[in-house]
Image 1 (tube, rainbow, N blue to C red):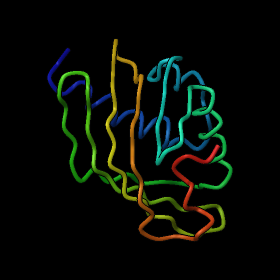
Image 2 (tube, helix red, strand yellow):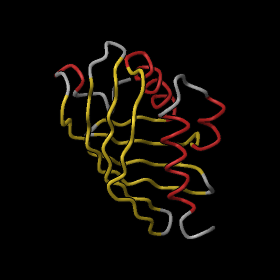
Image 3 (tube, rainbow, N blue to C red):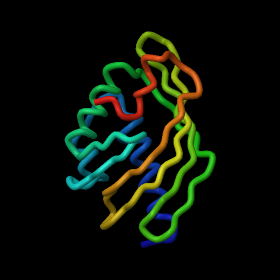
Image 4 (cartoon, rainbow, N blue to C red):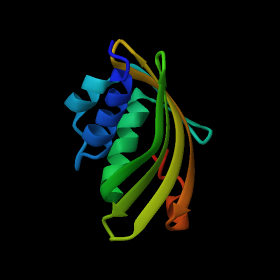
Length: 132
């Protein structure tokens, strides 16, 4: 595998899965393992929980932008420090800082362990990173 290929997989997941206007399971299957586990702020989601999480986000989020402040790859791990700015369907804005460790095996995301901090937005959106 190329030196930065795993970082590119993470960037594609953000653009093609999180940035999509609807949940496309064919695209998700292209990047995310059926054994996927995500830990977000003490909440754990499996693959089906992740799909549910994506559907909940698409219900309230119109668009989002991800600004990677830093991204590093070490073996099968990719670490990011990024800001997500989401425009909700009601036109309000939620901004979240995320520190995350992603694990990629066989070109599929198998694990995500992240901490999120809401920088701006409504109290009702504090769970935006794990809502499902």
